[in-house]
Length: 200
Image (tube, rainbow, N blue to C red; front, top):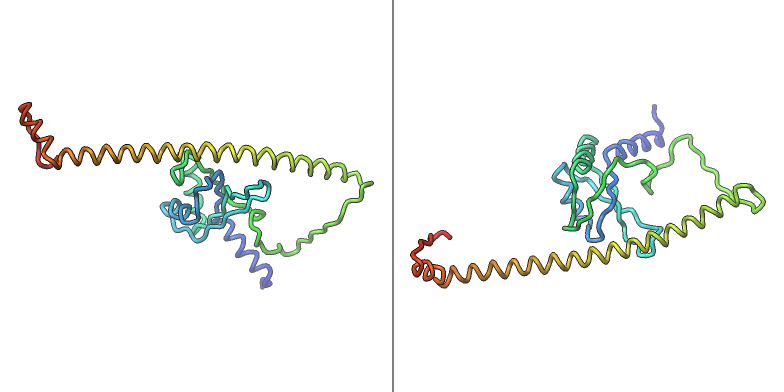
């Protein structure tokens, strides 16, 4: 008979199998947007954004999405891998792959596993390695923050361009409707000997 801890971890492993890791998300993508985008592949059970601890803006660019079963999760991954998949009208194709247990901050302790942590003494050979890793992490965080700011600026410009284009197209549509509505088109057609359908 399985112990409570083993049963709890087994249930967690099943959850991992039906969860996908989605990244390269735009800041415009919210939980409802992500849920609606992936609902077309199957029922989305839950969406959990992963906090960005390395960048000062703290904008999450990835999430764990739990689907109804592992088959639906694989279907999402297959579709997104084969074709560029955009969300929130942003030119940033998202990526997807199967989730891993280490991605969940609420994962239960694996039965039989023990973790030991201790401070490194400066005389320890691993101390210099840890120090270098710390510096590399800081450098990576600075570079990632700079790149994210550049990307956000470009997306904001593109968003404004798209809004202006949409507004211009809507004005053209209103103008065409106005011309058809005030009989100008019929008058011009009559002048040039053309027929205008009432359905146009």
